[in-house]
Image (cartoon, rainbow, N blue to C red; front, side, top):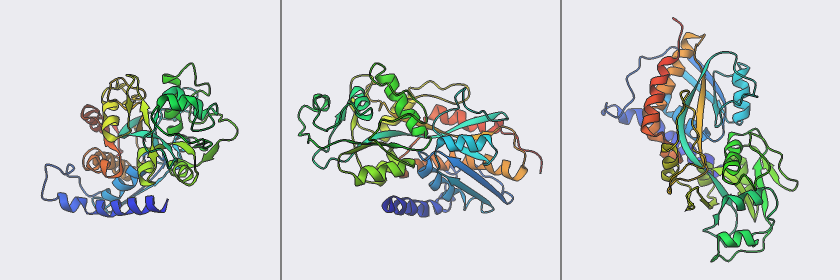
Length: 353
């Protein structure tokens, strides 16, 4: 946890210098924006996008010094709820609203920001190159496979020396888009094996351990011998976790990486509202547990200063912000989707000041 904070803190400090470095290169800088009036934007939600948000907020501050942006990573479910209740000006989510969810009271927009893998991270000092199929992952997280030398894990890893260590399953305890996308993968890839369904929360078996946020899961996996959990790529790397290669829809075991996540995202169909689903995407090089993430913004803003600030912030995300993504282990959006997102910013209606 401390190492993760220190690493991201150093990147934020580096990001603060970004606008200065870009002054002499207009081709790579964000479009020039007039200095904005004082405004404070509060956001909440996805911990999956938290690392990227921290860095891009830090880089945006020198560009618009009068604008303050606060973002709390309390989970996608909390973010969606706070957005509905008007607690925040924007929210982060890794999963769109379901028809059964409480819905926002006004028209709103989904703004995709970055893409990244969800890792299956594990703590086994004797195994550094684990491979797992979706059926095996499903059985592990359902509690059907209890030790690391189980026959199903051996079948995925015939040459590995697997210990008899007891498996400790770690999952999110809060309402989570990471949970929604991880369980969506298992529902799609192993429909006859996975029985717990999909959603921001699921009923995990007795004996499993819950933690708050991706960083909480990462911390618990790191401190528990034999543990396994699903963790976003950024937090897994920041915590120096080891993660498995996962068998994709083409039958290939693929390591989570920015390249394999980008490949999955590039092949996904984008809906008119800019939602899309790269989970279990086709393609031999696609990582199958690739997560999208969005910022939610109301189409019609009621405060001129805040509305102008949110538009400027989104424009920054889609220009200079994309260049920062890989520094904290996220992949930038595929170019066609990036173009659509940048165009969609114009749909936000800001009242006259």
